[in-house]
Image (tube, rainbow, N blue to C red):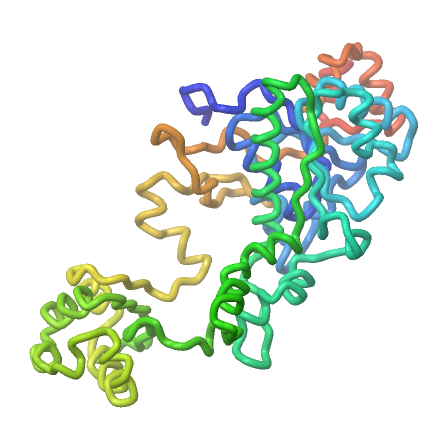
Length: 405
C-alpha cells in the first residue's frame, strides 16, 4: 500500500545490476525510500537468487521488494544498446558483479559515464583498489580475513556471524555514498563513481578492537573469552527450560534489581555494593545468582527485569520475530508475497523520517515485471517491444507481453 506522503527519493531512477545480497541491499534501501529501482536480470530464469534453496531461499523475496524488473540479454548487441539507453536516462546504477565483469559486458563506469555524465555509478566489490582488488570475495571470506570471525567465535574456533552482515553493511554504505553523490550533483551537475566493499566494511567493524590494541598494547580476546567490564552480563536458565540474558551494568541497576527481586541480603552486603566488587566476587556470586534466577519461569524473569528497569532479553530465534509484539505494533514488518503463494511479515528498513515508516509498495517482481512502461518511455513502440521479446533480447511477463500486441 502506497504511503500517502511523498517519499524522499521519488523521481530518482535506479538501475540495479545486483545479485545475491550486497547489490540488492543497496537497491532495496533506495526503493523503500521511493526511488524507481529496476532490477536488471538476464532473460530466462532471471536472477539466480530466485531459485536458491537452503540458506539462500529467502534472498530474492527479502531483498527485492518495491522494485520492478528489466530482463535483458546483455550478451547481445541489441540488449547492450537497450541497457545503455536506460543508462542515459538513469540517475544511479548499482553493480556488484565479480572483478572486471561489467567491463567485459561493456557497461563499466567509463562506458556509462560517456553515456550519462550525471550518472552516479555505485560499484560494490569485495575489495577497494589495491593488492586484493581482483580476488573474488564472499561474506564469509572477508569475515575470516578481517578478524570478525576471530572475534565472534571462542578461542581457536573462528565463527562467521549469523547473517550476511558484511553484504548488508557494504550495500548500506553504498547507499550512503549514493545519497552523498546525489546531493553533490545538485551543485556540480556531474555524477561520479561510488565504491563500497566487503573487506573494508569488516575492517570498519573491527576498528574498535584495533583501537584497543593500539591504546593498551594488548590485543583483545574473542568476544566469548573477553574480560569483564560489568558484573552481571550473562545468560540465565529458567525453570521452564528457556534462557534470558540480563545485563546489570551500573550500581543503580544493581540496587533496583535487589529491591525488585527481593535480594535484601545482597543489598546489605558491602562486598557487592559496587560493580567492581561484584566482579571480584563472581566466583561465588554468579553461581548463586544463577541458582536464584532458575526458580523463575521465562515470563516471570522478564517481567521482574522490566519492572526493575534493567536490560534484559529473551534468546529469540529469527522465526520468533514474526509474532514479536513490538515489531508488529510499531509497524516495523511488511506483509510480503511469497513465491509459492501466501504472505509473510518481513522487516522494513530500520529507518523513519518524520515518524513515517518506509512501507511496502510493490511485492518482489516477476522476471521482467514492470519493464514495458520503461521501454515505452525510451521510445520503443509496442510492435518493437514485441519483436525484441520474440527475439529473446528482452523478456516480459505474459500480461505485459499481451499488452505489447
